[in-house]
Length: 409
Ligand SMILES: C=CC1=C(C)c2cc3[nH]c(cc4nc(cc5[nH]c(cc1n2)c(C)c5CCC(=O)O)C(CCC(=O)O)=C4C)c(C)c3C=C
Ligand SMILES: [Fe+2]
Image 1 (tube, rainbow, N blue to C red):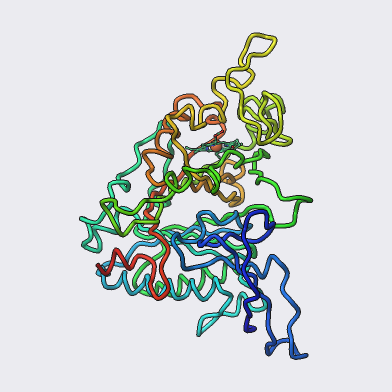
Image 2 (cartoon, helix red, strand yellow; image 1 turned 180 degrees about the vertical axis):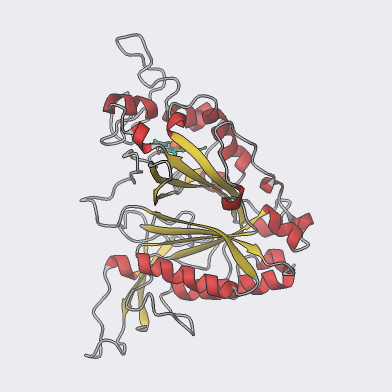
């Protein structure tokens, strides 16, 4: 792989196609002269290829990083007999590999899968599941936030595709870069941990639309509009664990709720456009509220139409999930779509790998999902098929590995 040269860093705000690093900046790399150029210098990488997310920092990358076009979610279970020592060695190996790959460097023994590509906004994010703590003798360090999520009436969860001792989220704007990282991390796991489940997802490719836009999901809706913004005064408090809490190793970390949500697309696509818009409470074309304005105009939840009915129905998804309807409960949604072919019943096995981030699931996912469970107009078109809850520690300082503060103090 060509040696790569750091050209500089830029602030992420408004930098289309450049990934926000964990430290709030992005690195822009170009290929320096390398053995594969023939002429002594390789052509410069495109913006997509050259964008680098930072591995080290206060928070792990992959939480506030803009959505990438490819994603892999993988849960591992520690092998029988593997404990704290083996887990620490694994996290050390994984961190070294992730730091190299995110910087566009190939590991010592490489598969060559990502040869010629730049970092392509690769992020690798590591988390610990509830079962990890008993297996490693660290039960006393298990955060209360990892207590099991309550059951919901619409759950149809497959335990084999749920939870896990360890969780890895990989995202990149190139499919080969993402797969390369997946293979490297699987090989690093060696005999210490076995894959419990893996889910593969995607989002729109950078540059596919004429201007930067909020993502669309497989139902065709603009999805992500009312996510908390980094510039919100309470963003950090809602999304990241503060220091000084009962589990100091989680300072700067966050809790990830992961749900494989199947979309019943055959049923959904039979609804008229007007009905689909009533289900969400927003226009499908541009995501604007049914009460008017543009995508970013606040919902007017009290507006009645000439027929005397609420313009945004009382069971509309955007109404029910809004923080003001849930005592301020908020989360950062950062999903990937998935499509795993056709299910045995002939319907598409497709939907959303819903990943949301919060400082405390009891003040984020749980109250909102409870409310949605009781009467969301979208629920008849969804099936929650798998679930996971993971403690994602803060980002590592230089020379540290992810989770070191848990495993070595
Ligand atoms: C428990 C949390 C949530 C689940 C599960 C969920 C599933 C889900 N949502 C959509 C589509 C949309 N969701 C939208 C808004 C929205 N959704 C949640 C929470 C969950 N969604 C929140 C907190 C919000 C924001 C509400 C607000 O503050 O206004 C929207 C509207 C656009 C937007 O703001 O993103 C859409 C569209 C699907 C398809 C889905 C499951 C597959
Ligand atoms: Fe939603």
